[in-house]
Structure formats: C-alpha cells, structure tokens
Image (tube, rainbow over all chains, first blue to last red; front, side, top):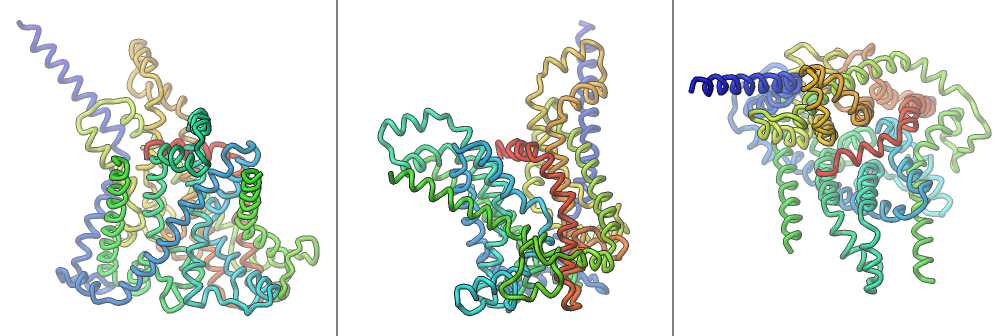
Length: 301
Length: 276
C-alpha cells in the first residue's frame, strides 16, 4: 500500500525530468523560432495596421489594406506574378519530369552528368548568372544580336519589350527551378519496381499508357511535393527581375516580392509593405490549399 | 524502328538542353578573358583560345575588394552553417527518439515554419533587426539567417532510422543523456549533417536579397553584394568584362565545393523530400 505512491512519484519525477531534458534540447530552436519567426509574424500583422515610415508610427486600422485595394501598382504586381507563375510552375514541373524520365534507364554516366549540369545553375549565385544573361540578351550586342543577325531577322530587345520580358524572365527562372525537381523525380522513378513496367508491356500497354497509368500514379507524392514547393518558391520571384529588368518595362516584371521590397526599402513605407506581405502570404496559402484539395480529390477517383 | 528514333531524338534534345544550361557559364568564363572591345562585336568573339587578356581581372580587383568580400561571405556562411547544424541535430534527435509533452504540437509548428516562405517576413524581420541594432553587422546577418526547421526535419528523418536498441544498451551501460547524444547519435548521423551543411552553405552563400537589405557599408559587402555593385556601376566600356571576371571568381569556390561533394548533394535532396 505504501509502495505504490512512492513509485508513482518516482515515475512522475522521471517524466518531468524527461520533458525538461527534451525541451532543453529544443531550446536553441525555440529561441530562434520565437525571436525571428513567430515574433516577426505577429509583428508584421500589427505593423500592417500602422503607418510605419522613417518618421511616423501611427495606428491607422485597415487603411493600408484599403489603399492596397485601390493601388493599381499592387494589382499590376499580382498580375505580373501570376503571369510568370503560369509559365514557370507548369514549365518547371513538365521539364524536370521530362528530363528525369529521359535520363532514367540510361547509363550511369549520362544520369549523373545530367543531374550535375542541371544542378549547376542553382549552385552559383543568381547575381553571377544575371551578369551573363544581361550580356546574352542585350539588344545591341552579345549572343541574341549574333543569332538574330545570322538568321537575318531584326534584333530583339528582350529585356525592354513588354512582349518578351515576362517570357524571358520566366524561362531564366525555370533554368534553376528545375534542378531540385529533376533529382527528386529521378529518385522517385528509380523507386518503381521494374516488373510493373514489364507486366504492363506484356499486357500490351503503349509507352503513353504506361506513363499515364503506371508511372504517374506511382510518383504522385513526389509530384505533389514538387508542385507545392514550386508554387511557394516561384510566387516570390525577385532577384532575376531586380537585376535584369529593374521591374520594367512598364512595371511588367515587378513581382509582388519586388513591390514589397520597393515599398519598404526604397520608399520607406514599412507598414504598407507589411500589409502587402500578408496579402502575398494569403495568396500563397490559398493556392497551396487548392492544390492539396485537387490532388486529394483526384486520388479518391 | 519508330520507338528507337523517338528515343534518340529525345536524347539529342536532352543534350541540347544541357548545352543551353551551361551556356551562361561558358559566356562568363570566356568573356572574363576577353578585352573590353570584343564585347561590342557582332558576331561576338567568344573563342576562348584567341585574343585573351587578364585585364578584366585586374579591373575587378581595382573596383571592388573581392578578397574581403570572400572573407565576409565565408565568415557569415560558415557560422550560419555551424549554428544550423548544431540546432538541427539537437532538436532532430528529440523529435526522432524521444517522447515528451507537446511533441505533436511542436512537430506541426516545425512543418508549418518549414513551408513558410522566409522572405515574407523580410519587412518585420528587418524592423526587429533594426531595433536590436543588428543591421549592417555580419553577426546580425547570421542570427537572422539561421532557419533550422528544414534541417530539423532532415535530421529527424535520418535519426529515426537509427536503431533504438543501441540507445537502450547504452542506457543499461550507464550512459547519461548527454553522452548518448554526443557519442552515439552524432557520430552515426554524419551523412545527414553533411547534406544539411551543403544546402545551408549554398543557400546562405548565394543569399542576395536579405544580405542586400541588412549590409549597407562597403566593408561588409559579401560576394553577391560585390557583384551587384559591379552590375550597378555604369562606367561604360570596361564594366562588362570586369563583371564577368568578378562572377567567374565568385563561382570558383562554390563550384569546387559542389563538384567535390556532388554525391552527397544528390543523396541529400532525395533524403529530405521522401514524405514532403
């Protein structure tokens, strides 16, 4: 009778000690999380309700959001971002899947050299790449001028024309956006047992049928992951337009993150920029949610 | 045979894509060796075997202090990598091998912060850094760049595969909590630390936007900032070559690093996203 409470006490002590140890291990993470993730998140929400500039810091309620609704530059940035995403996201997914599919079942040499080559662009700084791209697509000299002259067609002002700037910036983003998905798709394809395809072949399935009915369903988790991360990443395009076009021509390549950057760090309107950040966050969250829904719905089917 | 032809066509297209992907590197390296005037010739002269000069490298070293920027980048990146790996190892171990109150809750927090785009917090983060007096300091950049959620997830995934029996046996042998971690978990997890270190290194070394916001003075410029400063210089003819020389110099260490460790890269990427 007397022993039970003592051992219970001991057990409780042990559990508490264990919890203390666990939280001590997590302490550094939790400290960083609190100061540089959770607090900024809350602070950003609060800031969006204030007029924060170099001088002012006044509560203005929802005035920032009301101004956003009327700000045609802001809508312009949303449209520019979505236009790019419509090219970048499907382009990235399709191209990386195609490359992974093409190198799959080929020699080790080709597989690893393709992975290395396509990964190189995301290893080096986008600033360094922008230097080369700027030269390549200059209207007056460089690679583009050389090629158009050879073909005998007029020279193209890639970065200065409203028809060409968005496709070009999107295409350049794709060149480094595909690196990681290629490797992910390749390892997903390697994970499919060979006899699946052998059976399908015996049953008389064509290449296309095999791809759609066998391969695609089996790599669905990877596909979902790639689509979601591509969406999150590419709604935040910034460096390429910042360095290459300066957001032009006519603000055609001024993306949402670029607008946030300009409002905060060029115009000093921190509160307004924070409000934009919240809207961008809402858009990203909404799109990711829709994607998850779509994928789950088709899975049931 | 139609299938055979289709396959070789796709191979040709693949090799073409690889060439396109390597093109900016070729332009950069061969351009860095060309005298200024050759940039304005159409058709351009990018034959790396003729008409070579090192004047661009001399020019870039005159315009920016590349070696200092190297040192700055190396210090910021190296410290960020170390802090990230240590934090990730500690928390990853707890998530992989321990039961504690609130574990589910914190795991959800981990997943959410892993998906949360960091750059959305750029404005409030800058305000906080400013009020803590961390702007324009290497130390400030390090503190605000450390973001361990992804690393914790990576470590947790890997450490979950380590056998519990080993831990139990060492408890019986009288191993304390700290020794289990430092003498059993850490030595067995070096592959995941390697992968994590590589990712953190690359993303921090190339992080332009945040460093551009945080570091304003010339002495603190990192490599991406030195390069963007070169792009911004509008002093005519000589700059393009100097930019390319700067870009080439900036690529060398990271490319060597990458080619040396590329196996870990490819393994590490598949490691992190198994259950994305």
